[in-house]
Length: 604
Image (tube, rainbow, N blue to C red):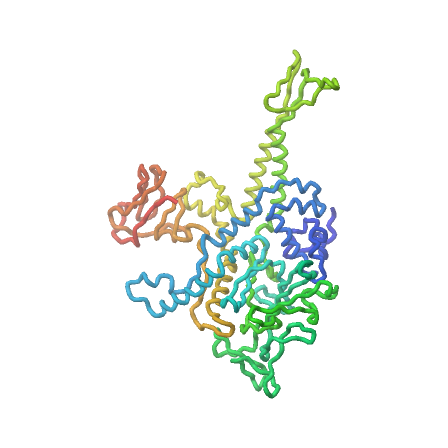
């Protein structure tokens, strides 16, 4: 097929799919829900890519290929969960074993010999508040949801909102397909956040409750601080917000706001910027529209205000430009990768290896077909005396099954078609595809657990093998999982009620556990974990240097080890004797000195 048009954007890796070939209507037949009038045309390719990636994650890529018309045998494709495994493995290395909320100075205040300082006690108290909030909001679960969505789709989202009935900040995750930011011409940098963002999705009709098809849109918008507002109603009974007027009819300001007589602007001082009046606040709008009231001229950015039905919060506040009393948008967008210059969206883990996934699924399908002929081969009979059907006088059909006996004539023979060689070739092809897959995704065979440890000559070689995975996680952690957690924890620890804040200069942040053992002071050598104060320098690729006094040091027990030399460095030597006992012993030319602590060797 000749290519008539070349389109390069953040989703070009899907151009080979027939459903994405048309730039103005991607997924027209596969995803009819994207063809509604309120979905902007510039977001169709992004939303279609999310659908494609969700199909791969749920083992429905073959069904998707059959629906789009590219593969009539797609429903017979074997999909064995490789995309989901890559996504889950990447997520596990990204987040580590645990995620911890930390405040500097509060990690080990009771381990010192002296009494903890007032600053340390204050740090402990400050650290307990977000940790208690994290337990109530199921923070690890929310992080898993958002970060897995980011790894799979390329983007993840958190939102923060004060809930009066629960008296705390709520943390929620959203589908990136609901996210529609409004960018203007001046916001070209990926680090710049837009002044207005929307979350929009369709609500199906409910005949039992008498509800029609609707569109719900939640809008966060930065704007100038205005007069105080209160819930009200229109003449037809719709809930809205109205300005509060004083006795003289003039607008009333919110408590704490100040009117600048020179600029006629309302200003407010936020706790995180003392002494710096701000004229900006964030407004929240949550409303629904009937689909029948929307025409072709309306999209998610231009829904008619006179047709909106505003929702009401649990405390009776109408969500029609409700002042949130903050000067930022409480939405965290988490890209899976560092966006390219001029781009604002992340790239999913499967983006560059999607065709490899198709090749792997095709090979698995061929292997399944070949195994059927290998296990039940085609049999050719010559000179056999076949049983006769007495009613028709014709030979009965030949069935190859256990216990079947044929009588052959003197010159009879039986031949079978051996396809085991083709099956072995297909299995080798699967292994080759898997090697390319882990190489291109930088997860490495060691990261996936398929590396034969017996073939690794040393711990340093294993560290080099894990290098691509380390760099992959480092690039992903440039924003997700740590920065997003810090933003959420900082806000929840400061906010007690809307408009009332606890002022603190101590930063509250999130920390993920290391993705590799060497990052936490552990060296991997031939399947053994060497835990000591030397691990930091070993993980950096340098031989640790220290001096030790003569004598023996505390030794550990190694399970299943024979007599071998595990590690040697200047000034010391680690020996393993028969039976699995290890000890550090100084060399003859070692000068007297002190070590930084006992060194142990233990089994993982």
